[in-house]
Image (cartoon, rainbow over all chains, first blue to last red; front, side, top):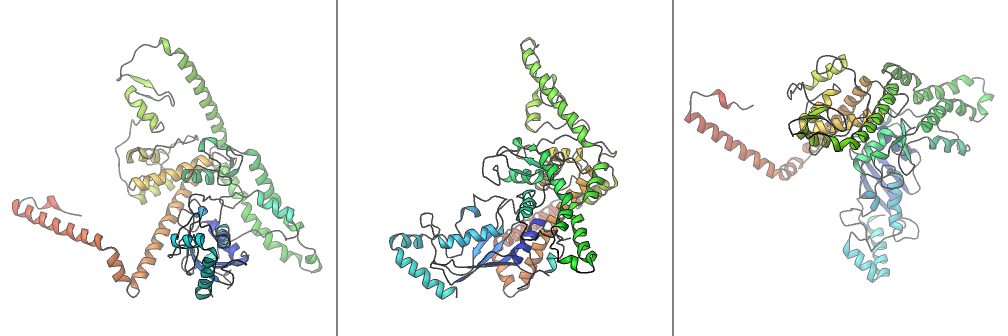
Amino acid sequence: MSGLPKRILKETERLMSDSPPGISAAPKDDNLRHFDVTVAGPESSPYEGGIFKLELFLPEEYPMNPPKVRFLTKIYHPNIDKLGRICLDILKDKWSPALQIRTVLLSIQALLGAPNPDDPLANDVAQNWKENQSAAIEQAREWTRQYAQ
Amino acid sequence: MDMSNHPLLASMDEPPPFPANYTQLRRLDRSVVCQICKEPFQAPVSIACGHSFCSSCIRSSLDVLKKCPSCNEPASEGSIRRNRALEEITDAWEESRPIIHELAQPPIVRKRPAPESSSKPSSSSNTKRLKPSSREASGSRSQSPTKSRTSNEDHVQLRQEELLDDEEEEDDIQELTENDEAPCPICQATLPISSIPMHIEKGCPPPKAKMNGAKKGNQKADWRKVFSGQGTTGKAKDVEMKRIIKPNYSIASPADLRAILSEYSLPTTGDKAALTSRVQEWIILFNSNLDTSHPSSISALRAKLSDLEASKRRDKEKGKDEMIAQLGQKGGLQKYAKDKRSEFDRLRQEIIERDKRRKDEEEGKGGRENAIEVE
């Protein structure tokens, strides 16, 4: 038997057999705690049409501790910095063991549809977003075309 | 891509889900599942907000964060209550599930002349989920812990009443000095008065009368003793089926932790971190085992603990393998050397100093060669 908790196996199986729309996730061959993830930009957002790559890692304490998630594709978003780190409450203090990979990825997709410049991680992007929203959105569209297609 | 044949997923054996048109049955199926482990409840308990989880799941969760995983309400271990009705419901549902599942199959099966081949595999995998034989077996093997537990609870209540009486009588108690012995107000163990506060702070460990020092056995031998049924103290002792009170890990010494472990005949090897995590895991396993009407035997719990430690070790070693693979890659070694530069420098410095010390000592005293053997 592998040392992997049954919950992780179960989640993985369900993620692969019945993934939420616009989201795919599959574990790496050599490490079932390490997932390759893609998230499609939500409709009528500046990220529409883009496919964003992410990596997700389940720490040893999962599900007591949250998974670690990072964008690999460059993205212009006030809550995602240039290293791909994500500012999302459920990945930090609002984590609960009742949440799972699926809910985390859906939340990230929702974050793309609703950027929150009042709780920024990338300060320059947030500044731009607040001062000149239409220019910022255009920039996000441009980056999506450039890096996510 | 289809990953359902992934080699690492091969061990999955899930009971088949209900057909999508039976939404009520799917809902029922979900309602007996713990939100933490996503499995049917094992030893279900409720907490103050009314949400229920497996006893061991919520205990591990509250060790990390004192909140309800479902609603984020503040929660504490003290509010955990055994949920007997939910356990009965879960058991009853698990037992009837294979039958209802069969009834809920679309009728196409009956047209075919071989109905057995289609019904058999599903029922066999259902029995795996149910595991009635293992539950019953482990239940009968333990020394009827449910009974002894209730009597213990009564005992605790009795003590509390005694305690109240004591407090009322406090006025006419004669004066005592610090060196006199007195019973601990919580566990009634007789101790020198001056050591009682520390004793309570540590969660009332039994007074160490015959602690034969902090002996460091080797782990293998310890586990072997565990499985051969004899404790580290030599004789197999009856473990009291009473909730273990958590020690205060920040002030507990390794010897305190070893005392707890040896009380339950568990291995006492490792540094403080290893001992702490072993005690933590054991308390979760042991205390949650008291929240069910099919408790496992103590030896089954010990085996579980050993499995847990082994799988954690494997996880760590796997990380090591990955690192070695990374080192083999182009540039991996340089990167590693760069990352660990300060560590390498420190080690080099240490070796230089040690050699110097050794040299000095050899020159100073030629006759005492063996005294500075370094392992």
